[in-house]
Length: 508
Image: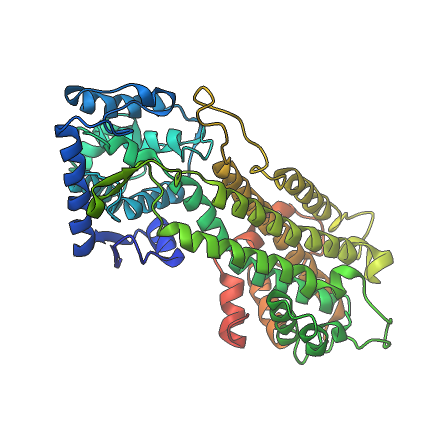
């Protein structure tokens, strides 16, 4: 377990994955500590002088014109957390909670939030010791940031709310006591600094985008297996075709397909069997490549957001200035995560159509539904139904959340991003798309078995063997969701991808 030093400027998507999924420890850099103390000193000065500053000596949202006395600033911040803890629904996954905590720490240490060092240390200690607040998944508008879910995170810092500790759900107070972490009393600006921003949507969407990058490679592998199973025409992936329409994702996908099917005896040349293939074979580079480019765009946006200040008001200690702005607004991420969901949906769309080509004897030339005892056995008839259902669900989920807005706080907050909904939908689409690709891998391996003993490509042979190590060829009907789930695990734990890249080199 390694340590990641947090300075507010250098956090990477890989760091997010390491902390959220692999329990890497976090520690503040010396530079960050200095910035935290400097901005806090200015907040203390404003409170002492009873200056009117939004969120420090005033109420919130529509109540920004209500001045709060110096004596009531602590009560103001505690009331903020309790009143904003309005989330509903199932708890967020542990990895999403850990990612959220990490991203909130990283924005606070940049020194523009005016929070005390000891308060950040409590949140960091919770992360390092595995105290994971129970955060309901629903209730964020994505502006003013992820208010409701983050309030549930902060409750545990106060010894309230609920948390998981060592896998057991308990009160926040009990979790903090068992972990040996002191609870805190919030003071001026701190409650607002902890909940005003985009870490929930960025954590959920960031982890999904990280997985999506690997899934584009799996999509190329599953497509390559289908190409071989259907004696696909390899000319469509010729480099000359793609360099004259130089979208990077398209070029990379075409190279992957040629690399995966190199030395195959199952692919064909144009005119040998037919003149051209259907689009979901012939246009794989164009379809997969567009999704790949979209996902890379999303990751660009995530990399900016990881090290951004998403708080309000902002403390500019050098200028002794506090500015109330809108960096909490999730629109940059909302659009990106909607795009992520759409890009993943298209990978599933094309995969499901290839599954149909595999199981339909009029299109494949193979036994109907990939079974030699059709009628007695249904074979792969219903896996295609499942893929179709998942694809149709994706079409509903891919409707952009960011095109919606609803006024809140008596119309003070009159445009909101719905970015957290966009991120949650993208994660669900990722799940569905992984299962569609698992079905394609499962069906393609079955189809290839009818072509024995012809030689597979150098990369597809490795993928086929990884599947067959866990999933046997289907001769008679059996419970197929077991096999589908096994193939999905082989995708999610990178068994197939790692095996292919070990034998073939890194895919693009």
